[in-house]
Amino acid sequence: MSEKQNSRSLKPTPAVGYTVLVKNIQKELGELDFFIKRRTAESYWKVGKFIHEHLLENKDRADYGNQLFKRLANDVDRDASTLSKTVRFYRAYPILARGPKLSWSHYRTLMAVKNKDERKKLEEKIIQKDWDSQKLQEYLTQKRAIEVTKTDSQGTVPTLSFTRGWPRACRVVTVPGKEGLFLDLGFRVRHKLVQTQGAQFKEDDCVEVIKKEDAWIFQKIEIAKEELFTYEAEVIKVVDGDTLLVFIDAGFENFLEQRIRLKGIDCPEAGTPEGQKAKRFVQSRLNKLDFVIVKTHKDSTDKYDRYLADIFYESSAVSHQRSVKDSAESRELKIDSLMYLNQELLDEHLAVVYG
Image (cartoon, rainbow, N blue to C red):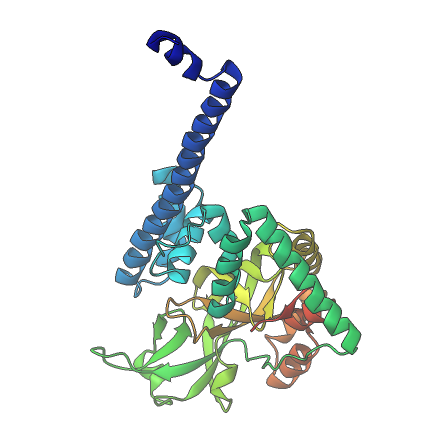
């Protein structure tokens, strides 16, 4: 056989050549898809880092964070919710691993897992089983359903510990570099006591503040410090089963829009059927109310100033609004009768105990 004839016999058949072509294209497109997913995660991580560092630089400016996300949403053409998630992403992963290659969709789901060790195990499971984000979400939904089933089979629901707080109560404080006394309204807001008001109080006293007609009435009270930082608030939006956006009346015409998370519980993600059920339950309880009572707690595990809260409400909001302006006796009686939303979500098996 001639050399020319031999070379012809070594050429692949059209079928074999096409198979190789498909494999090569799939390989290149697969690598492109992988690069895009990985690069998307890296970009969102960097965006979260930029915002996080900017927030730290301005942490002493009250309510700056809430206003920042709205402003950024307009200026960078991204919704505020996505920008907020990038910050959560960076805080959950201060160092973005270069080993396990996870997509932004994976990370968005993993951020809902608060326990770092559990999150690490899930990352390994994703890589080992080659799960996409939908499979990961299905796994977490099934896991949560099993936890709820265990609670049902035991026949008991955990009882949360809480204090109902004391609306309109503040602590007397001093401010470094400033003369006189101030009332600590929470959220880094201080109200200066004029000399005639401050003369009857000293630092660390607890004071109840009530407005009658055009005058502020100040009365010293004996309460535990755990009862402070309790407010009337309007519910702006139910974000999901355990997260609310509220408009808080901090006193003395100071109003703050604040995103809060319900203390002690964890509801399913809003994108799941269970999460939607929890969200609808909260909406059915709160959406028609003039206001709710919010007992805030600084999250000791979160150095970024996010707030946890116990939420109390009454369907007859008007009668309660009268009671908190009356005597201490009637105020305590009415607050004691308010419904405790955090516990209700547990009782209805719409949440599990956080941690």
